[in-house]
Structure formats: C-alpha cells, structure tokens
Image 1 (tube, rainbow, N blue to C red):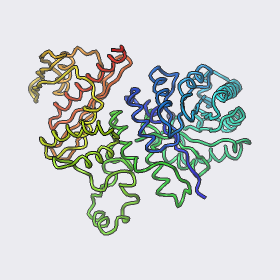
Image 2: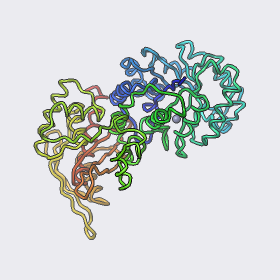
Image 3: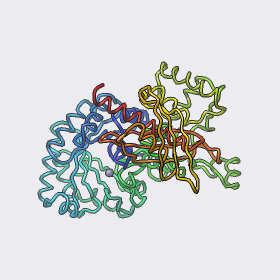
Length: 508
Ligand SMILES: [Zn+2]
C-alpha cells in the first residue's frame, strides 16, 4: 500500500536565507496562508533566535495558521530552544526542530567540540525540547560528510532522548543519489531504535541533485522531505517542492508513495513567492517555469494536437496553470478577474475584490490587454498599498556612444516638487543615482533584475529592485515598455516601501 510522504516546507526559513530573499512579517504570513492552501504538512516558519523579526514571524504564523504543523528552528542549545518554544507554542501542533553538526570538519573548525561532547549536547537539547512538546525533530547538520558510524550513534542518542523525526541534511549539496540512498539504508539497518522515528531528508542543490537525492532517499525509506517553493534557499537552493511533489505524483507507479499536497495550488504559490521575494523563476524551470508546458518543435506540436500524452507527462491544470492563459481586457467581468487573481496566488475578501476590480476597469480602458504583471501591480498597489512618500513626475535620460549618460528627474517628495540632474555609468545608473540624490536615501541597491513580460522589441519590461538599509529591505517592481522608466518606477516603489517599514518600526 502506498505510504505518505510528509512535506515539510522551509521556504520561510531556509528559503528566506537565499541571498536577497528576506521577507518581512506580513509577507511571511501571506506566504504561510498560501502554504496552508497548498496543504503542506509542516511549515518551518523561522529561526526565532536569529532575529526579532524571525521571532515575530514564527509567533504570528503559529497563532494564525491552523491547517499545518508549525516548526521553529533552534540550535542544540538551551537558550535557543527556549526562544523557539516561546514563539511556536501558540501553534495547534507545534514542533521544535533542533540541530547540531556531526561532521569532523564542523566539529573541529566550527564547534571545536569532541564527538562525545556533541553526543551530550544532542541528548540534553532533545530532552529539553521534549519537555515542551512531543513533536521534536533533530537534524545532524552536514550528515553526508559525517562518519556514518558516528552519525548512527548520534541518531540513536537523539531518538533515545525523544526525537520523533530524524533529519539527514545534505547541507552542502555534496551527495550523489546512489550514495545518499546507501546512507539512508544504513541508518535504517544500523540504528536500533530507528522504528520510533520518521526519517527526513533536507537536500541542497549545489550540484543540481537536491531533488534526485530526495527521491533516492524516499526509495530507501525516508518519509519526510524538506523542500522550498521554487527551490529557493542558501546558495544554489533547496530541493524544489513542486518538482518533488509532481515526481511523486507522476511516477506513483514506481515510487508507491503519495503526498497530501493540493497540486492545483502549486502555480499560484510559485507566483506569490516569486512576487514577494523578487526572485524571478527561470523560464525553463521544471513544473512552474513559463516554458514548462510550451511545445515549440513542429513535430511536438503536431503530436500534442493529436494526443496530449505524446509529449506531456502531466497537465498544466494539474499544477494550477490554467488551460489557456486567461488574458484579461476591458470586457472581462468580475468573475474572470477573481479567477485570474486566484491563479496569481491572491485570495481577496469581497470588499478588497471590489476595490481592485474598479481599478482594473480603469486600467483596462487604457490598455487593450491587461497583463498578469499589471494585475499584480494593481493588487499590490490597491490592497497591500502603502502611502507613497515619493512620486515620479517625469524623467528624461540621454545616453549614446558619445555622451555621458545624464538623467533629469522631477519628483514629488512629501507633496513638494523637487528636481535634479545627475550622471551615471549607463542610463539606468544615471536615473537611479538622480532619484537617490532627490530622495537622499541612504539605502543600498542589492539586486536589480529585468524580465521581458512579452516577446518582441515592444515587450513590456518588468524590473525588480531590492534595496537595503540597516536591517530593513524592500522590493520594488515597475513595468513599462521603456526599460529606464520601468527601472525608475521599481526603484521609487522600493524606496516608498522602505520608508513605510521604517515608519512602522518607529511606531508611527
Ligand atoms: Zn538548508
């Protein structure tokens, strides 16, 4: 009989550790709500000891989300575990996830501890966590580079102390599937009390093998997989949730396991996480990329028209991509608008829907086709709106092979018109530097990316920027057929968000 695989989503913890992907508390809660709709089993909401923001996010999610287990991460340290519990205790089904490294490299250089000391730490930490909740997960960090005999000893100790889930992370993305599979089989065969715990895996993608390693582990008996939406995470990222879930579903003939994930929510979740983190999904990304279901070759198109299964192993609608991309225009009604929002990962109340729909009608009157990005902009603007401190009035940029790129910008700052001019290394640089001069912002630009929404040289360009000041970050987006205008809009959008966050922090 098919056995269940527990899907442990760590988008909000490991995923958030992706360079440039940090989210604030409200954004994390929005993602958590969508993960609840996706029906993952466990949401790892954060690492409460890491920062006050992380603590607050875990606490809010634990208080709000009822449909999933909520986990909080803690080092194998009493103060860390106390802090994790303080945040996660409000959850209906709270889990404490504690970890310590077990490889020689980590013991020698990072922890500066002996193997015996680490064993003591494991026993102490797990029993301490067990005092708070029955549901304790233990991770042996850098397990794949640990001495396997010692690893088995550590696992036995953790289970003896009360751990109910044992996680085997391939922390540095070093393992090869056949080898990883052997590690799991050895643990199953050698650890005497292993039947009292669920084996979990947590694979990183440094060699592009995170999903392959996770599947190999499932075949060898792992029953929990840790993964993230769009595969985001430290460095090259984590195993991607959508790929694991769909591999399990498409190849159930071979794997004989299942998940409880509501696969129709995969695409909306992917979109939401991408919008919030500003991390664009590559077009050729499996399952959720723009080209994942696009057939270009003539022979393939011919085959698909005759019989879909000739070239399609799963359907776009099974992952929540609508059959024909629903393009909205001025004749689209409220119902179509609401359906579109759902596809994009937005569940609005009916009042919110009314407000957004009115604005949509205005935009649709001006444009023939309203793109998804326009709709995201409408909703983010109208519903998750923040009062704008800065507004762009006009921008003029000159550049070419013989001139120094120059920008003239006129803006409204706190209701006052201000203008200035400046140079830059290129037209975008000149525009952004001039805006920075006008706003006197001390923020640093940490990411700038451009994506074409449609094909051709008349394509709408969508720019995403991420800025940082002290501990605060903000992501701004802007779309236009003119890439410099889109950049200016995105930058000003980010500056407004950052101002709002700073204001909120000051309690204004
Ligand atoms: Zn990780």
